[in-house]
Length: 462
Image (cartoon, rainbow, N blue to C red; front, top):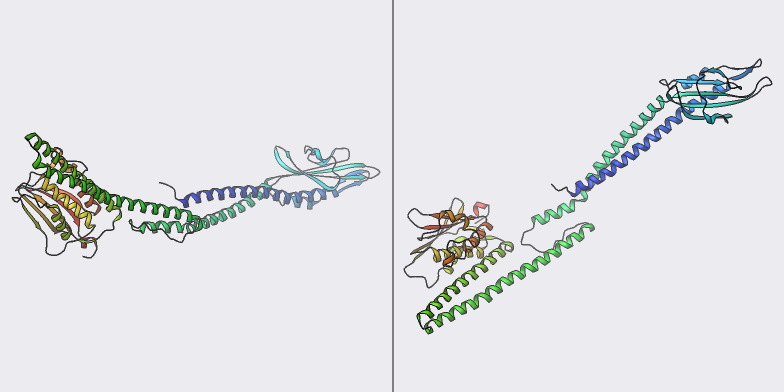
């Protein structure tokens, strides 16, 4: 199944939204980490400065009284462990964890600007703050340092919580964006759907230009359709003129040639000459029949594409076809009859194509079937209109019936059969929602049945 334009747009926009969401979430994660580090680093700096301020020289010795408030600050991160170390001017550990290493960059730290950096202690990642205090007492002089380290669990939890909140907000925003985009795309594509519906409702024979209200982006598309329909209209008109001209230009010389051969017959002497003339006349009749049927077939195909069907009286159409198909020179021993209801039998169709189809069935019966009787009937039965052409000839073998509706299929190829008569009639019936069939009578005889839906049965008005 081919994807729709809306689904393709939604897929691409969805990919862009997803990529944007990933970028936003990644940026939120880094921002949350930075925010968490900044918040807890402030606590760490406050604690290390308070410890540094508690250093004092008493009786010639360096002492420290660790303030409780410093540990209370660090205790705000309850799930974290705290490590500290106070180093005297000689580099010895005054109190705290002796294995807590001093960061390399802490050598030059002096004053109230502690160094905050990352590190490891006891196999666990920690955040470290180092502060230094210069002592100038006569008994002790030099620089003492305080190192405070804290594990990063609270930081990670805070960063995770902030990130999850941002993720929830991004998901909601993405869902709203996708839903809004979907509605916007459907609204924006309404002109395309409307133009498709307008084309679907248009009559197949209507080749006038389209004039819908469409956005500027669709104007070239509409223009191309109108250009194509204009060219198609010209081609259809040209084909119609060609068929009419060909019918006139081909039939007229054939008729004249046939008349010339008839005039030539008395002047031909000898048995061989008359036999050759008879053969020429037979071939000319076959050529005329084939030409007429080919032109009739082309006309039927053309009219099926361009002519709009209308309500017609099938009795009147069949009567006209009967009069045109029965030749004046028919054998007087042949019994010919036409039977139809008193009232009209209405169908939806093209009278010209229907007349050609019925005439072909009658002509086929006269040429290949009739021995002494031909009956043409119009019957209305069970919501269908039937045209029955019955003759008393041998008919067509039942095993050949499926093939007789195909073009150039005939059981009398050597007897002037072209194989187009039934094919033309079958195509006309199919174009009118009907069918062509055959029936053999038990008492003898063969019937060609053309069935069409009656107009009243199709929901129209007779």
